[in-house]
Amino acid sequence: MKALVAGSGGREHAIAWALAKSPQVSQVVCVPGNGGTAGEPKCVNVPARDGEDFDGAVCRIARRESCDFAVIGPEDPLARGLADRLRGEGIPVAGPGKDAARLESSKDFAKSFMARHGVASARSRTFLSASEARSYVETLAPPVVIKADGLAAGKGVVVAPDKETALGALTRFMEEGALGDAGRKILVEDFLSGPEYSVLAAVSVSRQKNTASILPFLPARDHKRLLTGNRGPNTGGMGAVCPVPDVTEAALEEFHRAILQPTLGGLVAEGIDYEGFIFFGVILTGGGSKLLEYNARLGDPETQAVLPLMESDFASLCLALIGGGLGDFKLSWKKGAVCAPVAVSGGYPGAYKTGFPIDLGDVPGGAKIFVSGARQQDGGLVTAGGRVLAASAWGREPEEARELAYRTLRGVRFKDLYFRTDIGTAPRV
Ligand code: GLY
Image 1: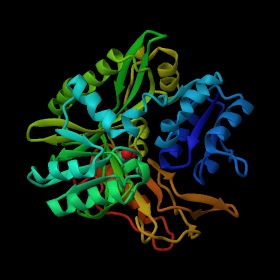
Image 2 (image 1 turned 180 degrees about the vertical axis):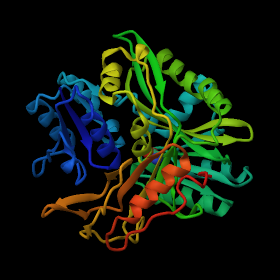
Image 3 (image 1 turned 90 degrees about the vertical axis):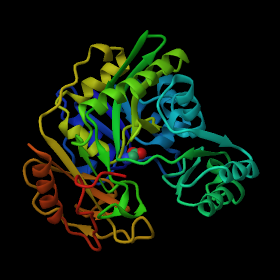
Image 4 (image 1 turned 45 degrees about the vertical axis):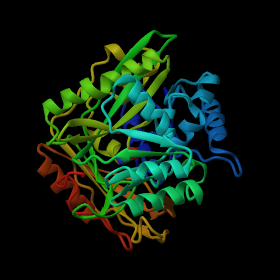
């Protein structure tokens, strides 16, 4: 069986690696893949042609390579409807269509969906008029959260500690067009505080197949801030762990009751077909677990910590969610924990240089490097992005996983490399 993975990040490397481990899979076609997937057994990178659009390239390559199914990693192609396009060409896909992907691509759609189905989340109001948004902000006690409706590559959320910051964000997003169309409509939300965690899940909701199943994975935690101690600017994610010791059984039960089940019920009630993965960004407040956001995909870097703990065959899971068999799928997990700290280029998330040779050192048993921003050059790896790689390591206990992950990461060398030293010790608050 041939699988196609669309995307070029660390999440896509982990997906390709997990698919390639399956005895059912003979080849994983990565479009375009990265320097990590290029060296992965059974994986092959296939780039788009010069000038070819990404979605068109994925469809053409899936057809040419006779791929049996595809997994779409990132949000942008999902929001554009790549999954619909592939399905239209007869290629089965793990990834929601454009309509369902609005749970991520429109924060307003997501919040109103949550409200319609009683999903626990913060109070929120949506505005198209900057002056109305300003008047509303004036009535609130800070901090408040200003969110752009559309996809904004992680730049669309401002947690404003005071009114001035909130009003400034409204002006930048709505009037100055700092985020383009993504910020013309905004949401003003109540601020919630507490440790955060992420739950990824496989979803199969199809009217045609009469399915309505959701299978949550073990909880994980991303660490968004750049610097050790949860300080500094937000990033795409500086490391993840799975599972999360401070997310108790009771908290997870509440998550199921107040967030997961109403989400499934909502998809069914609204007739929204969803065959793919979903991401729940959750905050544990004094008033219980609340949903901060949905993403219509697996998380990055959570996937690099979650998939190495999955004992079940990931290709079989994808085929079950595509084929209508998710309800009968038994998901099993290895015992223990995974820690996956990320190494970034100096200067990230601001400007950084690329093209530096990478020496991975000796990767010990129990550890795996997942590449995000690196390409192959002259038989070696060179840096090609802000987040360069994650050292993902397993241990019987979280501390053992952490120790092995950091031993692995300390063996990695490239110019201006930086990593946080506290992944797995600091709750994401
Ligand atoms: N780690 C958060 C995300 O993937 O959006």
